[in-house]
Length: 362
Length: 231
Image 1 (cartoon, rainbow over the protein chains, first blue to last red):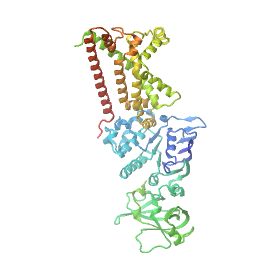
Image 2 (image 1 turned 45 degrees about the horizontal axis):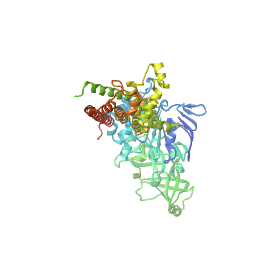
Image 3 (image 1 turned 180 degrees about the horizontal axis):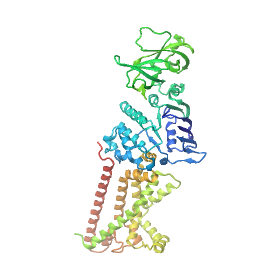
Image 4 (image 1 turned 135 degrees about the vertical axis):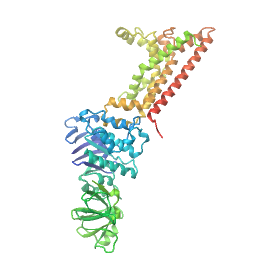
């Protein structure tokens, strides 16, 4: 459980963020300049708010009303920065143990050997940070933060400096350490893909305010998200479950509240919960069930809202038996099909539009 | 070969320079860190005060030391009465003069290297549980070591050559305060003593070169420690 209620006026930029979320991985989402880093800095004690309260798992770290302000080194907040910020004069092992050596014995719960195995750091213990790749450095930074025995792990866009292959490598490690160590994580990102894949609950920040907080699917489905942030990546996030794999065609069948989805085969076993993202630009609409089409996923739904956007595009929101989908179509198609709220439509989603970045494993 | 007298002069000079560096280094590190990392009212004033010996005529610094630390000066009397330390006309006074004159060089070099340490590394260390002091000792200072070595060497070299402030403050007493530059000066004032002056000058050149080589060597070790196996 993490409760944040902070206010800080900094010249032109004013921060007034308030949310309380209880989830293993909390996503902090918003575009750059929204105040995400300020919020995690306040949680870590690097930035002192003018007023407010920060409580992590029942432990007050900051409370202006009661004069509580725990110093940075006593907060036990693990912080993984955008840059790894490894200590250049120490080898990997000394970097990893830096925090551990500064904690009392009673606070030591996370074992070095466990973290070293989990993050695959064993072969590089004697090396200097200079000689590591970007992904390796970020893994060491995560391990170092974990070994400082944090109550909570803050990750501020830990993947932003990495290329796609490294991103996936580190994402896999983050998912794994979260499953194994059960340390709550606050994950900051402006990437819908990362938030959808990792976060169970999310807070959406915009211009220094928290505009929405709640379950990830709900928050990412909000119109504020669709408006501009990441115009090719936004869409709906739905919770699904693996029904079966089709080995012959290498497909996986997923069940969700609105029916079934066929996606390229994924590694999760039958019965596993899988969070899936359907980008708005990957969804086409049809007024009648189409015949003779290559599109594998045809989902019936009802129009709940039409969001006008600038330029050629509109977003049509569909309710599909409890799940929400978003389709991005042209203004012209909207007019030609005469789409209006309440109308029954078919959403068409190509199976190939689901890629690794769109399907989270849990 | 240098004579016993010459060796004694070199030994005294080295003692003065080493003691001046050793005693002023902790203060220089502290002030350099404060100037590099803190902002406070009057910071410009402190900065100016540290740099003063660099711009004042050394004789003026020596005179100020004489007024303050002389047997009847306000600080000199306190030191003598309470601690039994007398600086005026002693080699320790020469060390103080050398320390004051070398201080700005030392602080500048150390401050620059503190400023080049990424502040975010210090913040990261704080989030890992390091107290301010522990972060300073384990992160800031080791990463600034090269600048500390450079600053110490500069001040050492400056101390070996110190003349004006020394002769004004502690005079030119053979065996007590007559360091290498003072001895050379004395010989040049004596008719027919040019060979001795030349001899001592050559020794001074050798010492300075050794200091230069030493500082390069220290800097290389510091660089080596920082990025050992780069590439």
